Image (cartoon, rainbow, N blue to C red; front, side, top):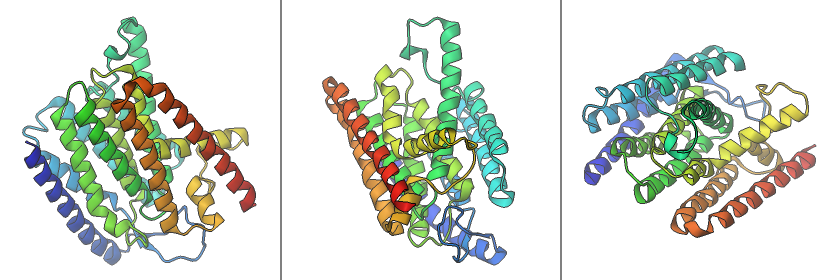
Length: 345
């Protein structure tokens, strides 16, 4: 089984590479070009967009051929449908630029499809003593918030060539490791999908790496975040309460950046959905980092949080210490963000 998944991973990676090359050619010919909306410099050449289409196609083609009767399963069929909704939202946003409310409605629609149709929700096994009604309300709220937060967070860090893809690859590899080696029960279909999603992003990365020849666009960033959120919840079936923290730790970089941005806008009386250039990668660029240095720095931070997630499984008796270490790192990041903000003024 593992050898088959490994072969499928290589095939999906190659398929993604080929589809991205084809999409790049079509995008240039059709002039599906865009400027990076997060870029600091005003003068910049336009780059092909809609790169997420290649990731979407390679992932689902690979999944359908690798996992027997994938779409005959009601849950996985509706996961497929929900991901199409997210893809359409991304394509529309890349084409005519949706406002934050419109984009939020699209994400919430897809998230509700996951909850009500795909059976993707936090399991009652996490809080066995809670009343059914209370947990149903809590489960729904937590599931929708998680899917929305992660989907939006990945979109927000997609501001430097290769950043969202690189962070996502590291995070997915870590989630694969923790799922395979430490889960109480392994759902092979979802583990396979995690591996194939990693391959789809990996095949796209050479074209998105500094200097990017094609952007993910909201088409790709929303899809990657959405699938990570959905699959990470799926892997929490019958898991321990502490396991809730693991997906957060693994994807801490985009989640921290998004949370910090929301808090910053709230404290300065700005609309929470208003775009700005005050994210961590923007501040590092203004401080003098090159794009490559920014991406490598964020990869290193992601690896640190990923190692904490893995160590918390290897040495479960020291989980409190790992949480304290996580808190210290987050404080350091917040202080760094504030210092960069002051120095950039």
